[in-house]
Length: 212
Image (cartoon, rainbow, N blue to C red):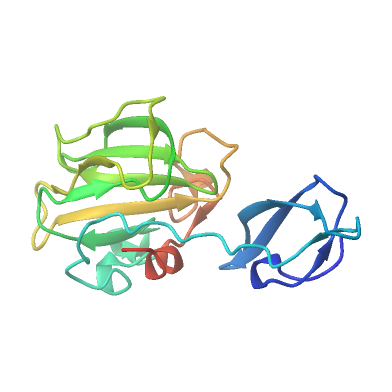
């Protein structure tokens, strides 16, 4: 294959019918953005012209978060437990009961109890595994192995118990390896400061560019 960055419409050479995976780097990690298929032009030469830029994720809430998810304790990587661990997601503050929706189509991997009296839903989307955490107990509308559509309600914003200050939010985590369906939380030294799998990524850029 020849060429650069198919998402910007530059020509790539390939065999007819061959899938071309478009990769970009996000926070220093390779991320799969799209798969396109080469087709023959009128002269019978196999080229891909102006590969379509992949659509953005859908913002997981029907309203904007009420506080900046990239600041203070809400931000990815912020310190927890006096710096002994780091925050593994972005916290989107919203009124308790606000609908949480799937950011893209996918398959539900698991649901269950999460943190401080809240629940979670984990969905395998085409390009990422996303854990939607701190959902209100009893609000989850899906179960493991369900197929979900982009925008489908999957639960509602919950409120943490026993936490001083604002604690009603969606906690969002993203993982880049969709082939790995092992536990996302990894306890002990193996989980590093985040106590998560090594393919954990910062969700900020995806939230910044999400469709609303």
